[in-house]
Image (cartoon, rainbow, N blue to C red; front, top):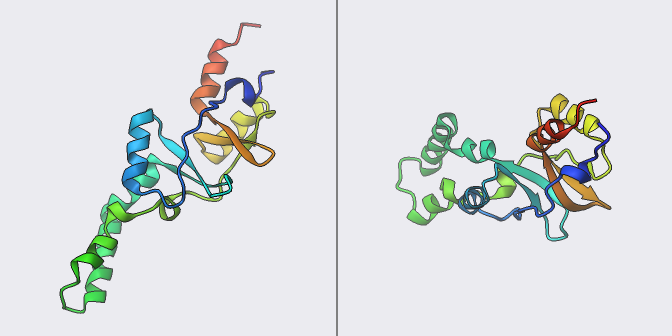
Length: 154
C-alpha cells in the first residue's frame, strides 16, 4: 500500500469546543452523518474526541443509578432547587466531561499500512490528522477500507 493518509482523509472536519453541550454534539453528528468529532481548544489544538459511544454513556442505567444516589445524598431528605436539578441534568453535559482523551493522532504522511496497524491495535475507528500540530483532516477505518477496495490487483 503506497498510499498515505493525505490521499484518503476528509479535509473538512467538523469540530466542537470543550464547552459544546451533549445536545449540540448529537445534532452535529446527525446533521453531518458522522459518528464522532474532535474536540479542539481555543488555540485549535485537539484535546479530545467524542463519539456516539461517549454520548450514550450518561444515559446508561448504572450512571443513572449513581446520579440518583448522589442527588439523594446531597438532598438529605429535602427537595432540591429546580435550578440545581437542571444544572446536573444529562442535557447539560459538555464535551470536556464526555470526551475520550488523550487522543491518538496521525499525520498526513503516514502510510496506510501503518495507519491500519495503529487503528487495529488500539481499536480506534478514526484519527485526527495533524500538520505542524494543527488539525487538517480526519481519517476513518472506512476510508482505509475504501482505499483497499480501490487498489488495483497486483
